[in-house]
Image 1: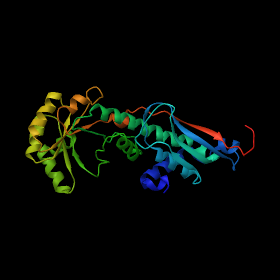
Image 2 (image 1 turned 135 degrees about the vertical axis):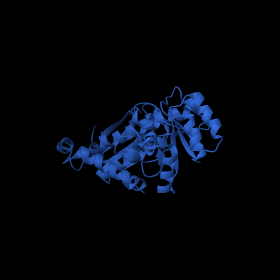
Image 3 (image 1 turned 90 degrees about the horizontal axis):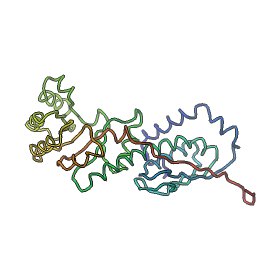
Length: 289
């Protein structure tokens, strides 16, 4: 089974768009310098410590340029690696390797950066019952890749988009006129979907619980307010803390007893993971270096 066959059609389409954006009418530099029949081998190497995500995406990138490329991952997805550690070997037509290199590294660097950042949050709350969630604050067009990277960093995904879960936020409540009216309209329209309500105050939490809402987002609440919400819910609803979550305060938030902690920074503020591709041109047997 090839790397392309293990990824969703949506992710493959994303890779194809990225390649088209970069290659355009052709790689004029590589095609001018590298003979069409040249073959080469190379390694993808980590230039920093972190968590790896996206080697399968990188493999698909190379193979979408030329299916003859052989890509061998040397570490597992979600593995912790050290600086200078080889991550994969790549062999095949030299033109394909050079043409696909930057797009492959762009995907690998972004995904591994998100996974590394996510793992820091996950490690920070180790031993608590809370779960780290992402948000919809992803790069346009890259949501599935960003959210896959969060998973590989040990986090979990919130809703993928606007279609797979109802999240009644402050603007919806204000438009409907009340929290109760917003919940009623949502239930009438989509009885099959999970409903989460954003609570700005403890009074909102109380009202959501009275309405039988099973998931409540606690928006920018203080630690005492979070603890009060947990006590008030008494296990009747799952509670998600959100807003101004950082590595410095995430442990304290988790220790309030909330079920989930969501942070947009997992995807919108993760530093790119630094990796390089070192190419070694193939030399026929007996030829001197």
